[in-house]
Image 1 (cartoon, rainbow, N blue to C red):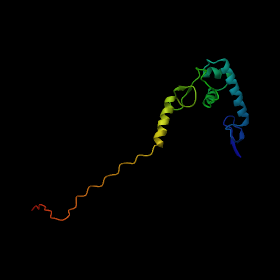
Image 2 (image 1 turned 90 degrees about the vertical axis):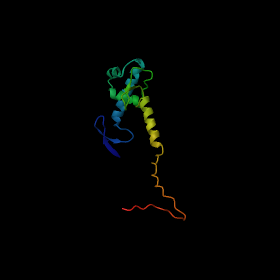
Image 3 (image 1 turned 45 degrees about the horizontal axis):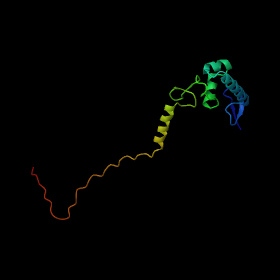
Image 4 (image 1 turned 120 degrees about the horizontal axis):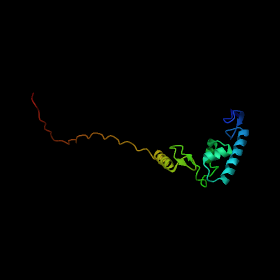
Length: 140
């Protein structure tokens, strides 16, 4: 059993599949219900307006969106920042441009490494198959 402190409330709990204690998990679910209900009635609300009206932090609402629990496709005024560049996005963690750059980087990493060109051995002079070779001698 892995005992740890809840990052949300500080109470000691047995960590399993959840990152927070049971009490905080229940509170998060209640916060989600409040946010979802508010957005059903106020589709044009911004993330700050939702936070003020429901008492749920912008950070927690952002987490709901990143987890895919809240779809912002019907609420055009709610955006969250791309985790890489900060561009406003409505779902996920990365904007289209950053996703594309990441995909290219992944492709580059998965391509076989190109081996550097082997240095060429110096060419050896042709061997003579008999006969004489005359060289000039210099006298100094």
